[in-house]
Amino acid sequence: MVGIIEKATSDGGIQQLMYLHRNDKNKQVEILAAWARKTFNMTAEVNEKDITSNEDKTTRVSPCSLRFFEIKDVVQDQTELCHFCQHHSCSDYCLRIPSHSSKNGTSKKRKCRMGCGEEDIPNSGKTPGWKISSNDVIEKDGRGFKKLLLRRNHKDSSKFVILFAILASKL
Image (cartoon, rainbow, N blue to C red; front, top):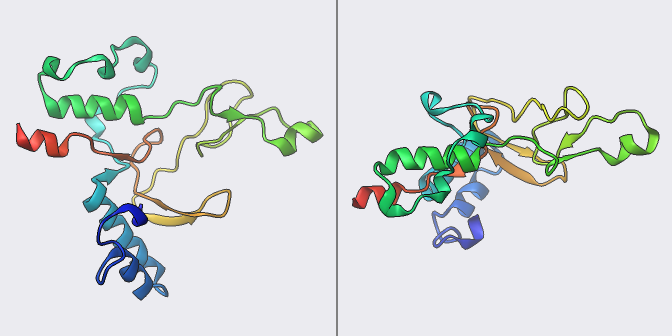
């Protein structure tokens, strides 16, 4: 993210701020989360009243199938797009049997490669989802890379960019 944004590496930019506060991890989290929200309009939170079950996703008409002129309410369309495209439901695509368990035959529970955890019951597709958190954190992922985890109020909500913020303001 940081390398592609204009002024990120200049004086007072995000890289300099992160470096200046390199010994204060809490301050770094605060700075980086605020920057991601401001620069990309990024969030992992959803409006609780707009959350419906993932099963509902299979029966609804996809908001992706609508053309712009068919949209009656841009804000509602934004909400539906975020819910439809940015809510994760584990499936055969993301669930894999970890290599260490398949070799020794200890468990047939699959693990979500997106980070939603391990199945409760083998082949059920039911995982705990992402951790709900009221705080932003910087954590190392499974490969050792640091990543920003924004506060999250729903276990199936992935990090996303609010789509039509600029467009809606021009209507």
